[in-house]
Length: 111
Image (cartoon, rainbow, N blue to C red; front, top):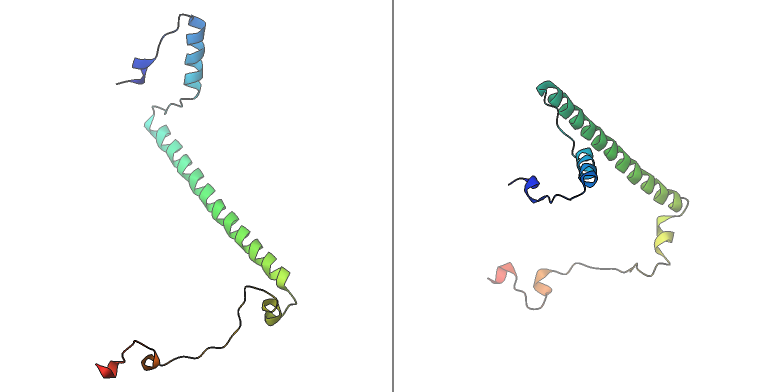
């Protein structure tokens, strides 16, 4: 079924002509010549590859600038001084507990 089927004709011919011109302005047509279609397709793919290539470099530059900014803010401060006054840092000591010392667990030798 074609899109032309459900287009309702208006009684005013100037309105139909305007609609036709607007519709045709936003419906790009492929060229009929095979070689020209091929060339335009290659140009489109090249443009797409170029945009992706530059977007990768722009993203990498944004990450690099962000990391440099973070490092610049931290300059001159020792690592321990940064962590000391922060409420989200928990300092403490730990020790490794042997598996047989844990309650409710059997060691491999008891099997």
